[in-house]
Length: 185
Image (tube, rainbow, N blue to C red; front, top):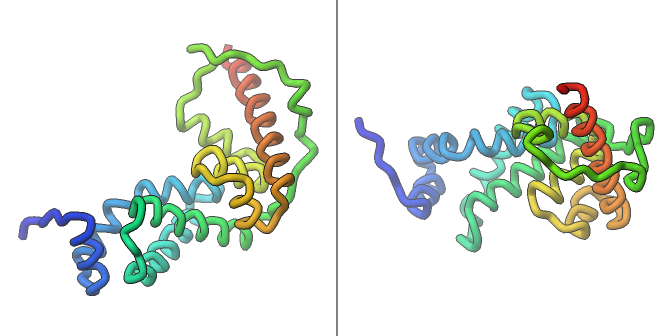
């Protein structure tokens, strides 16, 4: 039987009615992107997959309450980020690691060139090496577009701590990128 392509509103309505084909179609459309979102927060693929599945379960339960305000993908992304954060709290110690920390002022700022350009996969790998607290704040701020006040509320930290962890994450990433560029030459 041919697959029928539904508009986003029709697809959501069909999912709310409990139509399994529509639910599968919605899952298939969003799963790859949302797994990438979960992987930004959780180091192990298995943990990210669990967050994805739990996030989809929550999304399907909350779907009748979706108000069609803003982007549907953004609404789903927010659910996935929250689920990934819940998994992160359960699985990783969200502490700040100072052992590898270099003061941001001590890092030379180097303009990006073709020699230092990283592939997205390399950058994601470097992000995965950050301590959980740094990685989480960096992802929420730089990749998801949250402000420091929102991050503070989500993580139960102060706004100053959010800003500090972002600064430290950037410094650590910059140092690791510079090291990667040096070691590949």
